[in-house]
Amino acid sequence: MTAAATSTSRNKSHNTPVRSRTPAAAPIMVPEGAAAIDARLANLLLAAEASFSRKGFAATTMDDIAHAAGMSKKTLYKMFDSKSDLFRATLLRSAGQFRFWDGPALTGTPEQQLKLWLKRVLDSAFSPKEIALHRLIVGERVASPDFARIFSDVAFQYGPEGVIDCIKRVKLRPHLRKLPARMVAEMIIGSVLGIDHFKHLIDDSHRLDPRMLKKRIDVTVATFCESADGD
Image (cartoon, rainbow, N blue to C red):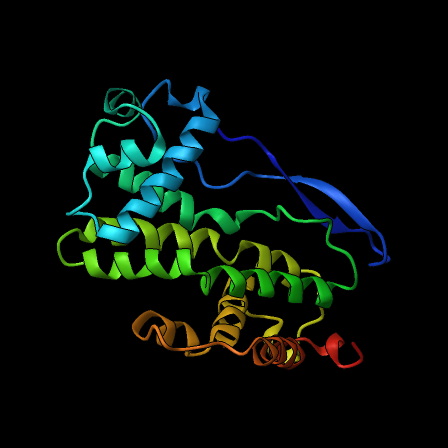
């Protein structure tokens, strides 16, 4: 079902974008045979995600999802044996989406590329779709702790990978250079998210200021990266 995805690295001059092959997003565990119908599967997962986010796991039926996806329930059950399997696949799809860069070729200095990655993280984390899904995960945590565990495991494993790749090419502050790249990436992501993500989860009226988010990214990169001083 998955294929290698194309990402961008840079040559030693840091001035020329280079296309490279990187692993694809985290594989979704689906019943045998479903991998041959990528387009239909993608449409189904989007429909399922929307249905679960709108009604919650318990209240959503397979009839609801089949109708939203424009397919028969018989076809749906050929692809997934149960609502739980479908929900799990939906979580894996969402949590693994940051594993590779799927936008235009990254250009500029390593610090500028890091800023682009961080903007992507913020854009997704604060999107209505992701906020709805995160609320769903929290709401289902007590009744279905395994779903929350799956989502968090995949998100924390693959979510920082793009930022980690950028960190390996920037010049970090001296006291950060001996720390694992993943630890630094998680600190950077936490810094740019701040408390706004939590506010967004609990308060529909909370509004984000794009200028402040950009400023937060700039300050965070300057705080962590020595070579960003002259950026």
